[in-house]
Length: 436
Image (cartoon, rainbow, N blue to C red):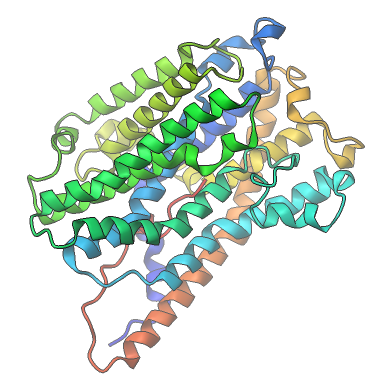
């Protein structure tokens, strides 16, 4: 008997992982904290000591976006890994792309339309200026749009979605014909190590060949290591299922000493705050050594933070309390909207945009407000707008996509003369990870 198409949709909210929602919420608010801190101090150390210096020093910088990319790599790649190890049904790419598009694009398009009409209308010179961000090409055919300052991650995430089936096909060919799960896993990890190296190589190239935040800085090659770490976690996770005891030693250590990993993440965060080879509390264009250290801390922090949250049985009571409470879980649910909307809300607070008569880049407005005078209204307005976006747009669209996918799957199953082995149902966090 085929389950009704709505069955999976009705159950989705009951299967959320509390700590993963919570880490999404904390990281999303850390992004807001970071960019507000950046907006309350001078841009360059050459201009003098940073204002509100303690907040700019404590700002996590890019560290807070790392866990999002790791979650994408882990949860989206895991069904492909299960097929490689367990022979489960091949993931339906049609449903995969529809779900991913529903998760990422409608909310981004809404925010883009708002920014074009409210903040950039007087700067639009033609149809291409309008279409460019909707087609996610604004980081390649580079063009400045007020409010889309950090929207480079949306094209990067989208391109990972497109590349994932190809990466999975290539990786699994390396492991084909190997019966021993541990050997198969080691072979599959080799290309992921190459992606980590690629991130460091791209960072070194960009910071040695360019000056002052070139468009190439925002291309997805600068975060391939984060996706790779998430994909490696998917391999280790399935390896632990099919061959207990074959997973790496740190996987088992996480169960016994989960706080050890968070302590390591805290050390990486502290090193990042100190900015070795740079000037703490500023947004100087970094030297190559400083940028490589930053990348190392980004990968280390994100990995160490996430390990206890994805290893079964590793999360402690402390982690459950700090991440699984209602506030953090709610912020996690609306985290994508928080990420999208905090910069437009900052521009409105600055009074910069076409509705105010002039659009001034945020770099020209640094120091206009103190930290608390900016962070409170920006945070509250961002949470409010993100809540509306989630309940009115994001959640209904995602549910509609899930209903379509369930109906398509039921129709395909009904058309088969003999029902095949069912594809393992995905947990909530695997169906709809919070994209940044």
